[in-house]
Image 1 (tube, rainbow, N blue to C red):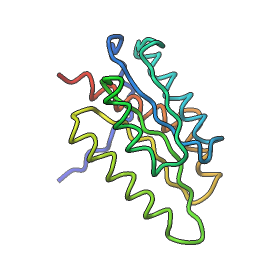
Image 2 (cartoon, rainbow, N blue to C red; image 1 turned 90 degrees about the vertical axis):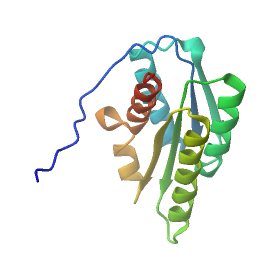
Image 3 (cartoon, rainbow, N blue to C red; image 1 turned 120 degrees about the horizontal axis):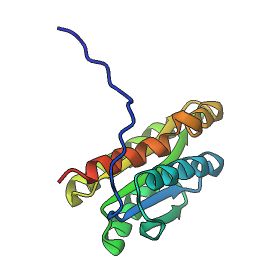
Image 4 (cartoon, rainbow, N blue to C red; image 1 turned 180 degrees about the vertical axis):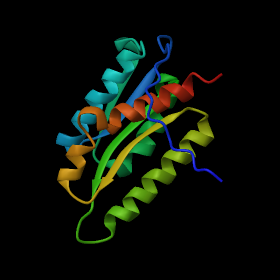
Length: 154
């Protein structure tokens, strides 16, 4: 059996009628700011109007699922992009935080039917976080594209 490789081919659709939220952690803000900028650039590339983009900042990644849920309800969003950065420390706290955040976002997506772009990065150090938040490897941009692609499936 031959293994298929995932293609990172960029797809751009017409998302001009969509309303999208971005919920980003203020923790590791130097990283998440870059990811938010990447997400915004992708939304613009797909035609999402600036007036239809709602950005909400929260303290850390743990707060992101609830903030996404509230934003979905209040703004009647077609998609939301969750952006956070969890860096490994001396304990296993990062693992618990990442699991809870991931599970919360998946549950939210399945319960509401609203696509959630997963832009929560987990890294061993700040250098890795910077590498995943800039340029072509910007995970905020990738999360926005994933959410839009799913939102356009009708």
